[in-house]
Length: 419
Image 1: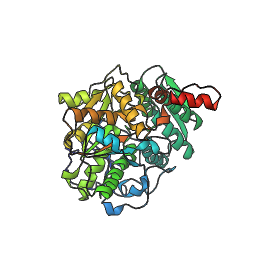
Image 2: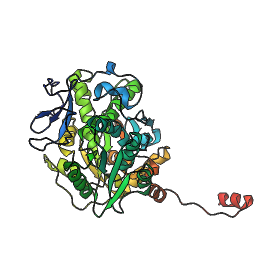
Image 3: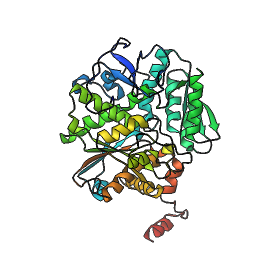
Image 4: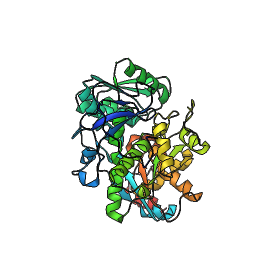
């Protein structure tokens, strides 16, 4: 199976371009990377992965941010703002409260547009330029549209985004709007939007930059490379577990791919690969359902609902890549309630780390797994938070404390504080 953690480095096929090609994870068919627009396999419609003849080692990396890792990417540089090099926060009070040996928080909300999606877009928009396409498009719960609009603007390209009407946080729509994207609000959920965008892409009307696009995940795998490098620098070891929110399962797939390539190059021992642990909201948990039932694929949830809008997805397109990633690393998946997500959002804020609700799902999931004894007290854990607090200011306001009205008088203010 091509997605096994210890699979050997692949042999370079004749279709490769400078050691890079596309390969189907289902049937193994191989394709040239930049000759034609291609999202899935021509032969079986399976998901594609970008493959490299020479997977990188740690010595191949230099610089800062996403493009520090260009030895693990299709190009030397991309359309950049720049992105990456996000903080790996210490959260000592939360660490003690959850009850693990080490807890660090990788805050992807500190990217240029406020989410991890920037990492994928710097690569994806660069590929779009290589292919010579005109219009970029995505379906989005918000963050993808903001990132695509910004990077499309940076690259001087037309951008089209489809959003589920009334289901996207205002902060995200504002970003896409200001970056001059054309915004279409669809009377349906995210999965309906993605169906339409895939149809538009199949008709040649736009270049799809959702995580179905294998090149977008190449940028996102740099999250895993940064986590491993910085954690090792601080502790001399690698984390036992990485806990991350799951929507379309792109990050789970991307991190697993990063780790497989490091194992292939000999830069990382298979025994040191962190357990990938996915967290979903209870109202949108098809990945958790598949893991708990031992299924090889997810079953589409037609009705999904959660205040964590960024992971309100019922048909994770990257499940065929993500499910092996969770299982091969010894990880698991767990569903949490909206109330647990809000509590975790407050806990992170108390440490000075401001995130949108979906981001806090990782901490909520870790807390639940620790309480159930799935996560041990001696584990070293990294939680991934994917988007900034200001992505969803309404949710932040609801989760926070209410303003307190006081008279226009210093003595009255002091009296109020004393009370």
